[in-house]
Image 1 (cartoon, one colour):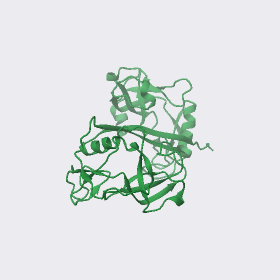
Image 2: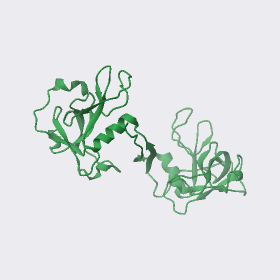
Image 3: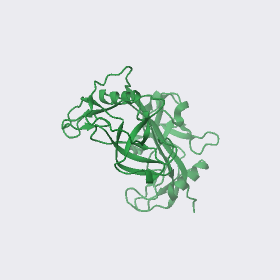
Length: 318
């Protein structure tokens, strides 16, 4: 029986967005130790501010300044902080309604333990020493027993010197992936420079990579079938922009990424095409895998020199 594989996996990409006048004023205000909200059509002050009224969908522009002090409306204790969380020691996640606001802001509360946290407790912002115009300019909240801030927020024009106009947020997901019996066998075969799929006992289609069950018939699959190594380009795209934080950073653009139907397979898989100018790649091109030294999967596919495949032989896989 094939050993079931398991490995840590990280999916990560930077998400970059521009800011409109409301979000720009809010984040720039944090850099200047100023918390801004926006007044909704019903008179409520929303913090963090939003660009459109959540009830009427009208555009909102009436900015107001609220206090850096507030009240905890609900909370949850975090005994084991993870990477890049606001504090490196155990803390509470809290929703804080700042004085002058009608909605709550989510952030961290620095407290010695869960017994020190309760709904209704008074807190204030602890500002970060270095501020750049991001939510992290609020380092955290801390307990506060001083005077409350004004309940009526003051109007603010949202104007600052050198406003923040865009942000880049790293999105990352860390998890452990267990591919299961069928894909473990597929990955093991790749180590030997072989590609295996599984055949459905009903429709007789061969799926690569194997899924352990036929997606058409819903029947479990177990019969292994070796396919390829050669195949046919069924369709493709030309990549003109380098993707950040990927293994393809050293690949010069433009390059071609294609769907490749390996001989004997009834499902096309993905692969990069090289060894041919990008503008000469075409549907029906016959290709074969190229393995880098010590690689566990093909580095790319290159033309075999065979005549192009007839469209009727791969049209069902486009």
